[in-house]
Image (tube, rainbow, N blue to C red; front, side, top):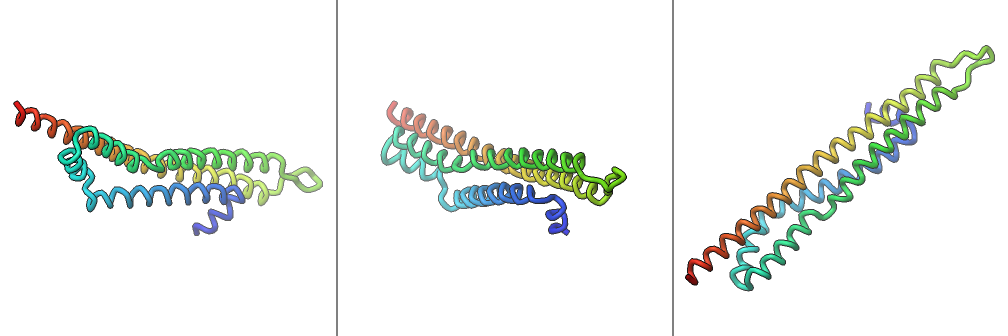
Length: 169
């Protein structure tokens, strides 16, 4: 059934598929990163660096971890937005095919050609929007996780600084 929708969407569906592959691969990569944080424990590492090397080194460590957390999010955003544009291009292409479809000698439009053109318009739009929506959901999720990591890291560093001030004072 999915193959039939793909066929009905026409050649533009290949471009939507390419955008989907980028969105899916990037989402899987980011999910792998976040699952890895369960074992790597970046906040624990941050506190260890603060204890051994000081606050400046810990801030650098936090910055590096945030860079790792945000890696690929621009690509995810771009691919999902490009999928929308590709879907809209397919819409325009399908509608143009419908308008310019040739009829028989009497000037009547062949319903089969009209249906094919309109299916291209509909299926590319739907596919492009589906890729966009899925990509944007994952983008929002990963951005929220990165913001949470930054917040927890800043709080952990603030608590270490307060403890040192209490011990020193």
